[in-house]
Image 1 (cartoon, rainbow, N blue to C red):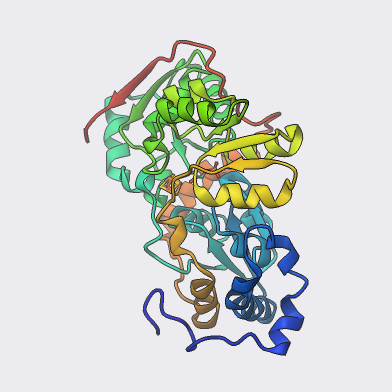
Image 2: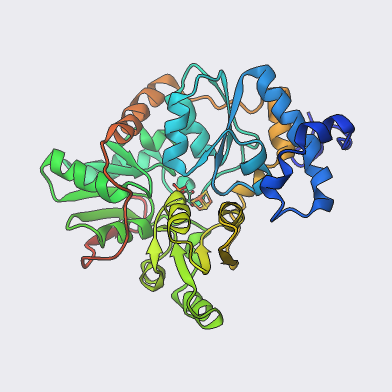
Length: 365
Ligand code: 13P
Ligand code: SF4
């Protein structure tokens, strides 16, 4: 099998057949992919879409995927919560996760009988890497009787030690729900210390968290936002809640990747900046042609490991299969399913209403 990054065939040619199969797709990405580059993508897109039909496969594409993946081969697109819900519902026999490894694990946990493929096994996440199942067991010993809320950006081992999962689009509601169920005002909320602080500013509950962080969002600063506003007066600033709280304090709105996308669709600002991963702006810009996107952003190196070439290779070779030990998957499924089944009325908003009560466990206990 070719190594990561090598083409499947020498170069796939932009033949008349490829052109006929893909001409209708180019308008979806024309605003962000120059016409001269399209013949490089189109043969892979045609081959992937043919193979999906042949193998009864679907591609779940996270909002951070590059536009040619997101718009031309993705069957379902969205934030972590939406992709988990799609995985739970699909009739396809094969799921290709165009996202990072924890997302593919979530799909496998929810669909144990399906084949779940990830094009690159090293597409990780700094949050998922920050904590292990053993760490959670020690936390539970240290704070007995305290419910554990785990961000989905974690491994299956960590989810298996968890009472309920959350994503950034439902974190506030999940914390309040579990505190009510357990009749407590304190939760273990792991592993993102910044998301924890941002959630804590929206609830009266006390959060015990972990010193994890997203390597992409922790790099943004409040000063970045002030400079952006000076550079483009009137620009609307939207930030992901994995950013530090002082960044959110400077933003006009904070929400999950889909929360930000919905904000742009609804409000149609003249100028907007998305304080998040770079491909988000391309994908949201394509849906909102009248909005101007100011473009400072940070790349997620893990998300960017997923390429058209890798997706094609994955479907051709049926590699890399995501496997999880049944006893881990069964426990993790309960925590994810509890989250999916919650009748939530709205997406979490992060407008900093309370003085946050957060305690960060700095080192492994
Ligand atoms: P969302 O759930 O908002 O899509 O976030 C996933 C993620 O990895 C953000 O960095
Ligand atoms: Fe993980 Fe951050 Fe990349 Fe999202 S953007 S996958 S949280 S490292």
